[in-house]
Image 1 (cartoon, rainbow, N blue to C red):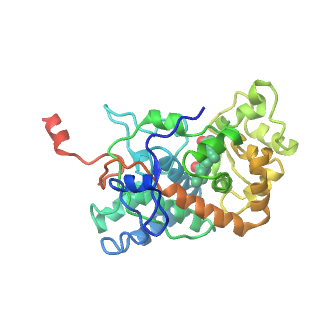
Image 2: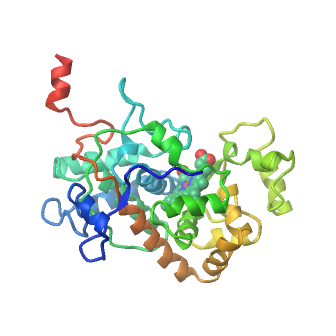
Image 3: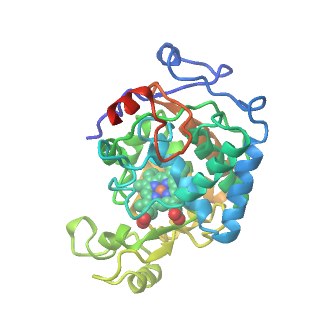
Amino acid sequence: MISKPKCLTPLSSPSSSSSSSSLAIAAVAPLLRPRFYAETCPEAEYLVRDVIKKNMEREPRSAASVMRLQFHDCFVNGCDGSLLLDDTPNMLGEKLSLSNINSLRSYEVIDEAKETLERVCPGVVSCADILIMAARDAVVLSGGPNWEVKLGRQDSLTASQKDSDDIMPSPRANASYLIELFSKFNLSTKDLVALSGSHSIGKGRCFSIVFRLYNQSGTGRPDPAIEPIFREKLDKLCPQGGDGNVTGDLDATPERFDNQYFKDLMNGRGFLNSDQTLFTYPETREYVRLFSRNLNEFLKAFVEGMIKLGDLQSGRPGEIRQNCRVVNSRPADVLLET
Ligand code: HEM
């Protein structure tokens, strides 16, 4: 059973239709809109893209790592930068949760973007918005589609390791679990398949696949959906008892945002169980076929999914953090320290 995420509501922009429940949330959650910083920090989007580009020149994989941050931030209490908070003596944040520990990376790229923006327009651009711009830019700079992002998010005042543990899906998940999980976030089966296409770029660890290579569903056997030559390759990369931190490509073109991922799934060459299951299950299989045949259909559906993902908001109070890793000091904190 998947528990319902706590008070998470997709918040529509004024131009799109809103349900009465999202209007109620809008009283506390800011309305998101394109060009939010046009007056207050006109260079914001240009500056973020420049940071992402320079980091990709240094390390191409940083594009994938940065893009993944949007998913892990937005699923846990909305897109509020909670993912970026470091643990404190009083708060266990999301960085060390089951899905994130030893896995999420490139936080320093977001720090660099924030430092750049703080120099140009201090106290204006939220870390939550930087994540959204950075994910879009990582896709564009990897050869994927461009789109206009809605901005105006605030940064959370807290983060919860437990919420991340409860919500983020495991690489062992199957399609029916993922369909149900995504539906809790107003994301359709088509959105699920299209968003999984983000695995068109980046890498995963052996840790995430050894169970499917050697003991799928406790059978003591490999996942029968893995194509044999590909399985031999994965067995060599990830021997039983080997180093779980060794990484493999999530598709055959891991630095190019394209529809190769879906072609690979059709050939039994998905890296994660949660990838390959999308072709095994009838409800998701047709979308895999469609996206593998038609690049534009994939790109269109992907952009729609990313926008819907970016609309998730908790409605909790927020702030514009000065440093993405810590909440700003407030009078109460200062009093406690004295
Ligand atoms: C559908 C459910 C999903 C599951 C179960 C899942 C799981 C995973 C896992 C296990 C990894 C490899 C992590 C590791 O081995 O350390 C990974 C990597 C990645 N995921 Fe997902 N993911 C899902 C959806 C998404 C979505 C919606 C996005 C973005 C919109 C995304 C973006 C990425 C990217 C770009 C990487 C590569 C990161 C890198 O190279 O550093 N994933 N995912």
